[in-house]
Image 1 (cartoon, rainbow, N blue to C red):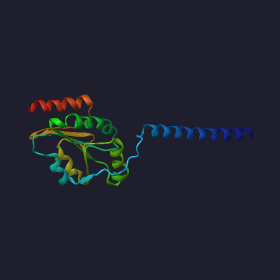
Image 2: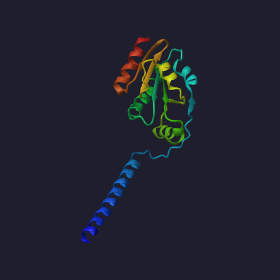
Image 3: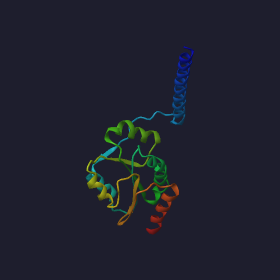
Image 4: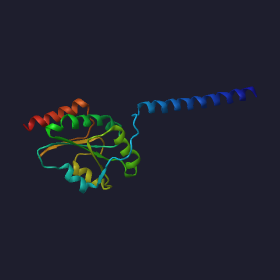
Length: 183
């Protein structure tokens, strides 16, 4: 009987410990969240590939950086601030950033818009909702496996495709290389 009572006490204490750890994790998450409560008022444009295609093939004098990403992709989320920095720092140099979300349509309101608002994303964001991946993945780049993140950097007819994540330095090196070539 004493053994059963002892086991019961250990079990109850371990459950309380788990709850305490979970509560601590929740409190830690709250500390990392911005003080303002973000609303889902982000104006998200949703395209199929036919609608997206003109946005990723603009013929003008600007340097275009198109990043394919999703909120569920950890490397994508990690590099997103680098694209935001490029958007801000190089906007006067004719650089435009387009973030193409491949989040699932059911998650636009609950996850994607909330993410964009909480992070204060200022780059243009569109969502690609096209289930015919066998058509649009090779149309974007014939060597693309469909893995994320992926990025296109282009100006006019010069175009490079990257199926990789970037460090801040790597992305800036690519941008500077394009900017130097166009002078």
